[in-house]
Amino acid sequence: MASLPDGTDALLEFVRSRLARVDLVRRAPADLWERDAVEPVEEVQEALGALAVRDDGRRVVLTSVDLRGGDFSEGRWAHARLGGSDLHDTNFSRADLSHANLRWAFMDRSNLEDARLAHADLTNVSLQDANLRRAQLPHAHLSGVKMNRADAQEAQLQFCNLGPSWLQGARLRYADLHQARLELARMQSADLSSARLSYALLKRANGGGARLIGARMSYCAVEASRLEEADLSGALLDNASLRETSLQNARLRGADLRHVFMLHVRAEYADLRGASLAGGRVVETELRRADLRDADLDDVDFWKTSFREADLDGATLRHADLRDTDFTGAWGLKAEQFATAWVYESTRMDEELARHPVLQERIAATADRF
Image 1: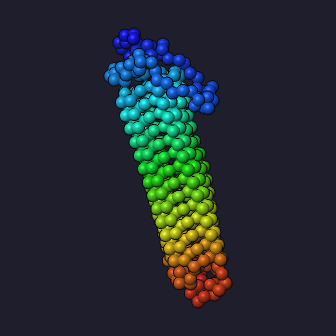
Image 2: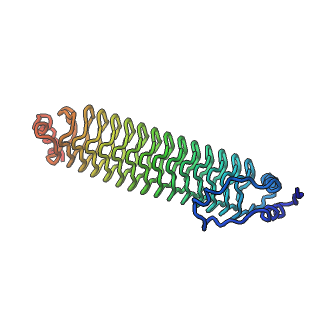
Image 3: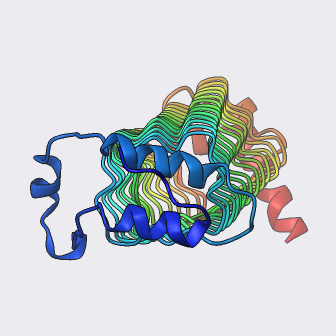
């Protein structure tokens, strides 16, 4: 085995001279996947180990090289430039990659468990099937990242830009995405149960079939997104803003939507049993055939909202404002549920219920007040 040179620059030149160059931008993803997982030759791995423990503050530059299967674990790679390199099946567990530049790197099946990647640039990086458990990525640049089927449970992704991104089937349970930006994120069938998404932005995102059970989404903004058949049971969505979003067939049983703002939301057939929308504002929203049994709708300001054929058995409407709201064909409705609600001439419901003395009295009281 050749003796290793001294100094960071000499070690880097030694490694580069023994590695093949790669051009990942010109190669098809399928071609990269078909490449065998290999380990660097012993002398290269030894040189990488020497670079990992250096303390001279010099930046490591290993761009567009073949480092498949390399062991970078527990190393000091802060500010390293590894962009465009083939890093699949590599081990970066517990490594320090803060501020590193990994743009366009191919890192499928890599191990980044407990790695530190604060402020790292992972633009257009492929991390499919990667292990990112408990990885620390606050303020990381993740635009264009591919994390399909990645395991990022308990990962820290606060303030990250994940738009656009591919997260289909990713496991993000208990992940922290506080104030993350998820514009054009593709999250179909992803598991974000108990994840923190407070103040996050989901814009034109697709979370169809995603699991968001118990997710903490207070003050988040969801715009022009698709959450059909998503499971948000027990999710915390208080003070959230939902605009132009589809929740058709979504499960929101027991969800906390207090003080929510909903505009042009489609929630046909949604399960909102036991959910609370108290104090919210719901405008031009479609809740046809939704399950709202035992839901808390107190103090909600409804306008042009449809409850046609919805199940409202046991739901409360205390002090709710029902301007231009449609209850035609709704199930389980009783006159007593409207005893303190603000009911207008424009509020529509089945004729028999509309003629009830309680409804007549509420229409008169509303007309006197407004």
